[in-house]
Image (cartoon, rainbow, N blue to C red; front, side, top):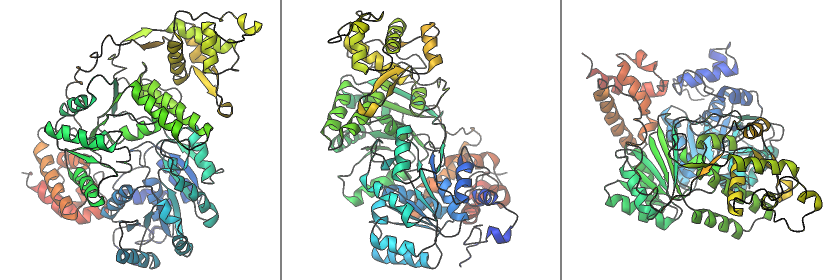
Length: 630
């Protein structure tokens, strides 16, 4: 096998031979340090990697920016054989392969953009045992000729990225992902790892069933993204004008604006360019070459705005996106969290801003009604839409609401979203909430939302003597049916009420016991948004001055060197036609500017500087640093 110098894994210096005392997890840590330049695993990474290194399959739900990729990349480097990664988008595969190659990992992809000669060479490398990781689409993987060739290839791991795509309950269901369940039969001895950033309990259950992972361990990390500053506002007047206001208030920053249609991406991009913003439109209707060029331009730019349909950005690890603006809301909280999560991937402050209106929700529900799917699926998807709008139009911490949606308990307010900061005026609905909770309790969880509202209003048809005799019958005359429905939705979202699916006919019952008791005792206030007095109520407001806090703290003394390093990186990236961040992240450049290493050894000790990058870029970086020393 070829020896490629610095990489301490199966195709370079075998850890089992060179360092026989290392356990598999210690070997993984050594690769993390020497190949990727990181000192230690984060969060649940070590647990997931240890499970796969033991030859076991698993499901891992880790937040965007939480290092999901390393959970399958490192086992592929430790275990013998080829690591196979199933990924839904060419952009995702391209980005990850480029980053791996920069780190000295032998990685390649097979997709529709790969010509015959390159495809042939990739298979030759696989046959010679020279490739560590191969990225493929689900459609490409399940072709008979592909499965036949892989059946003759030793595999170290099969990773299924963006695994939520397999679930009809998820926000991005792709029928072709359902084929992947066959992998359990075709490769029974190969550990399979399904990874995603967004999956609630029902979606996780579907992933396990469809991918044949019923007995596999499940790892679910916190969905907290403390670097994200969230806000939302109802659409008032000219929504396009509001988008321009928001973007121009954040000059010199990379951002993504999501729109609901191809035409709207074009018109918004044009409006932004008219305001002096370097904006590009991105959607599936563009010619393939032009779409690829616009993506490359965005990834290479320090400050650019991409106006895109929702498919854009999945798996694109541009770390310095400082804001994501939804000109139109997504379809569910899973999609919302994934899309706003494309900001702040470097861990620095970033913003997620959503514009929404009643017409958006009606349109989303209408689209669900027109889909050719089972009624049960429509009901679940409709519920997800309503939960998203309950969060957007709610009065409690947005980040906490999202985390509760994914099943986290004991969640505290973030302290920095618009609701935590008191930007939304609310009215006290605690007494009404007590009535609704009392009604749910007395009805014993045997009825749905509509019946609960009818009971409060005293309008239940053909009411029984038992129900009419309850103390809660007709006690809600002070509110309209719409207001009671809104309050019920909010109580469901806050976990004070819960719904039993009941085969597609949800029944409403009481939620978290202690939280419900706190409402009855008056210790927990329930507020609802106060209706705006006029259409202009929010439209004229400016965002917080400057938007998110300055990303990447760099002192004035270190700023000239930091900018010089960024200029060098931009030139190096342009020469290779790769995004700058696959060479070094801004955070690594900031640390270099602060430490000012004078030797290769000192540079190699910094976070994000692996051995391959040190060998490739060390001399150039030290030359830039040398110009600022002395």
